Image (cartoon, rainbow, N blue to C red; front, side, top):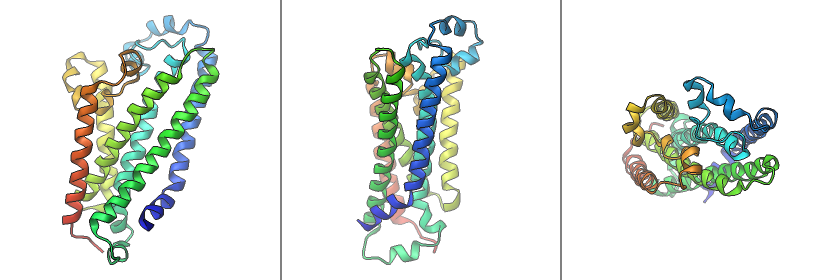
Length: 264
């Protein structure tokens, strides 16, 4: 239990920093909505923009004259922030004992490696859960203030659920890489690199329809705002794929860490 609280305390400032950044993103984004999109003419303007710009702004599927539609644009950046945070957290929380030369101190304690990993994963889970709750509450409050009576809470809630699944997935991607990869100092960079590759791939798929078959390779296509908000909620196939990957990568984390030769 001491490990759980120690890890929460260690990453407390980081979690606060990321949360404040996301709150600022929501507030500044919706302020821009009020200044540029609330008059209802932005959809016509968007239709005249180049395809590349439309892809970044939701591919024309979002009604940007509504607060919920404009919020859908921000979701892309929410997902990017949340997954970077989760991937780095997952990698660092496993690798930092070797990186910071504290492994010898920790592993002489009367606690198995299995127990150590469990407490670290629980701490990381609580960390991303708090980040997600802050994102959800701030979005409900800020977007609601600009919604002019539009029902936005349902759309925000389902988007945040999708984001949480994505956070969990990249968290265990980070932990599994740190457990397998021998270079503890580079595991966070590798986890973040994988996240960025899948993110860029999701953008490339929107640019070129011939790449649509790759949508099952990048988790960012699983929880797009335009699909979740206007496509009937979370797709069961994507949720199942995510759940299977989360379980498998968690098993990889435990098995690899238990077999690992620790460098002290």
